[in-house]
Every structure is written in structure tokens, then in C-alpha cells.
Length: 342
Image 1: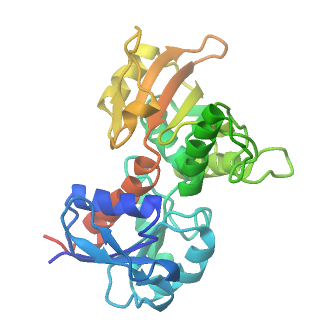
Image 2 (image 1 turned 90 degrees about the vertical axis):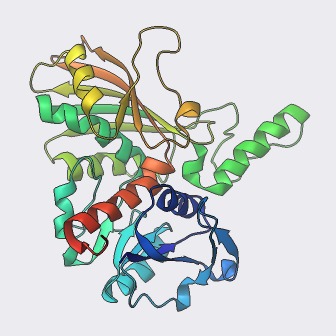
């Protein structure tokens, strides 16, 4: 017997990707419900490439009683209102919003990195999915941390517009077209022109001059990997539709060479090492779209610090950064706790 699964926010970018991943991975679901806002109620959407269609149900009236797992792909406001309702009905929530990530009673999970932390989910019956940029970074950092203990991380991100939802993708498309035909090009979703430009500003500014996106990377990495790790992040929006990239500088407690790091990363779960020191011997965002892996390239020693390495990390933010990680959490939950499906 399989699970009864609810996808909340099923009509959005991440929600549709969750449905795709559930179908692709043949998640043992006897029934899947697509749930979204009232304006989407009654719409018909595809359940990945399975050939099945789902009728969208209204989140405000949906009864979570009798459902096993709810994958939430909505903003914090909706998660705040409906996740506790689902959890109280006995349906375990896996939440993609930022609302529960730093709650001490809610585990923040990347299955390749800290699977054991999921054991604390019963406190609120809610599990948090980390920020997309954090998820791919900790996948790359974890095996290196186990080998040589990380002291400090400095990361600059190159984040695609899909991280800002459909409106972000539409704005990049429209601005690019407008530039070529000479039409007006005022920004709507972003604070400045995103086409043929980069914007060092994601989410709100905080009092210390950092942005909330940068703060998320710091505190989430500490919660997942360990509070002693120092993290500095600069998060930048770039004119790429899908796929986040990160240039990461790492300082270790113990000595580790580039060759050792390559060997470790080559065998690490969830990672694909593509690191040929030649033209094209690395992965870019265009090449990672639709893939499950977190790609690591440009592994090299940093001579400016003791025991330092620099790496380049690329991943599909709609997959490992959101949908795939959420489904992997559901799979992990089933293996460790629910054990309902054969």
C-alpha cells in the first residue's frame, strides 16, 4: 500500500516540478491531490509525464485528514496558515517556504547531508526544506567537511530568475525582447533591469547591510552542518532562466589537497564532479537544467589561506533547490519512519 500525497501550490513553478519529480522517481503514491489558491480551483494539470491529470482543489477548503504527506510549495504566509492545520490532522508537512526553517522544533533537511535530523520531525509534524542556494552548497560542502572540518566559507551566488517565480522569468524574457526591439524596459519584479545585467540584491536588506537571502545562507548552513562554521555570502541575481551557480571559497581546519577533494567529491552522494582543466571542462547552468545532480567543477587550492580550496557549484534550483529535495525528504521519511509502502 502506498501513500496519499498532497502537493500544495501545485500550479506554481516548484509545485509543477514536484509533480514531475514524484512521477519520474515513481514515488509510491496511491493517490495525489493537487491543491492551490482559490483562483486555480478547478484547473486541470498534468501529473508529470505519467499521463494522469489532476483537478486542482482549493487550499482553503481542503481536508488533510487521512493524507500521509503534504509537500508545500507556497510562500510563508500560506505555510503559516495551513501547514499547522495539515500537521494537526496527522499529515506530515514538508515545507519549501522559509517560515519554519529556523524553528528549533522543525528539522531542516538535505537528505545527503543530515538525514538523521529528520528524526525530530514529530515535535510539530513539519519538516523544512532549505533555501535553494543553501541546499546545493551544503551538498558540496558535507563530504569535504567530513574529511577536513570546515572553518569558514565565503560564497558568491549567481542565482537564476526562476528563483523569483514565474514573474521573474517573464520579466527576463520581456526585457530581453524589449531591448532588441527598442521598447520601454522598466523593471517590475526586480529592483533594476535584469536583462543583460546582474543585481547584487535578493530579498530585503537587513540592518547590517546584508540581504535576507544572504542571511538565510548563513543561518541555514550553520543549522545543517554545524554552528561553528563561519559563513559569508553575497547573493546575486543573474539573467539566467533556470540553474543557480556558486563560487565557493572554503577554509579547513585540516590539510586537504585539490586532488583529495576531487577524489572525495567523485564518490559523494548527489554530486557529479565535472572538473577537466580544459576549455569546456566544467558545468554551467544551461547544462544542469532538468538534472538531479549537484555539479562541482573548478576544484583548486587557494594559496591565500592555510588549508583553502575554491570550487564552482551548479544545480537546477527548481529541482535540488526545491522540488527534488522535498521529494527526497518524503522518501527519507518513508524509509525511516512511515514505512507504509512496500
